Length: 295
Image (cartoon, rainbow, N blue to C red; front, side, top):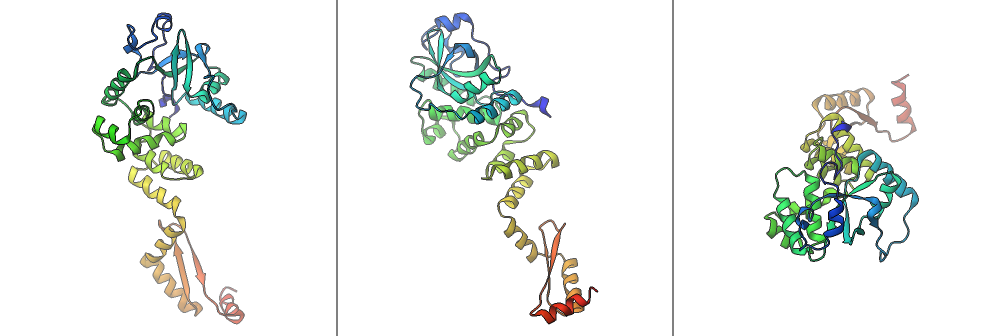
């Protein structure tokens, strides 16, 4: 399955030419439209951290874990850079930049911001969102950029692209999924609907459990949603299963109750594959009577 996975930017963005690095600094420069709104690969050597970055501490263990993820899966979400002469200053994504260095990458997928490119960028992004070949993660990233970099509200964005606000929100939530799940959506192993079922779980361990179950059992979106509800409410689901006992279990309850002369309750999981038997006793004498049947 892994060979199907494609990280954001792999094969999608051309490497910036020396001419682009030297001459294109403003949206009015010739050739600017070639990469405004697009993903391009930028050499890590040409990128500088933002000197006004308020964050100065980066956890070394977390960086190494991200670096390992990047080695395995590539950079899922491009960094955003501001063109400054022949160099680039990081607007967002310094953790990804640092981790990519640790991972030994030479280039990183990037969005480039130029002077006076606001209107051009908005046009490029809105046009991009209309493409039919975009996967759900690429759509989510484009919505996020329109909200964060252009400064649109979700209401404005909804009107601009002709989509319901709830649709936009559901796409953006997919960006909270871990890189493995995002890559599985991008490669077509699972759908965005599966991703929404996974992200509905708050616990990351449960998210991974559901993700693996979707892959291994080839669950439909509806089945994934049911499994998500099971993971969120295991106790209520078990109780619900008790109320809807199959006839076989009801007969077994009655037979055991008649034999043991006490109340017997059979509890079953929702799928009926496992359960437990509960025997009532009021005192030690009744317990001894029940145990006598098993001797």
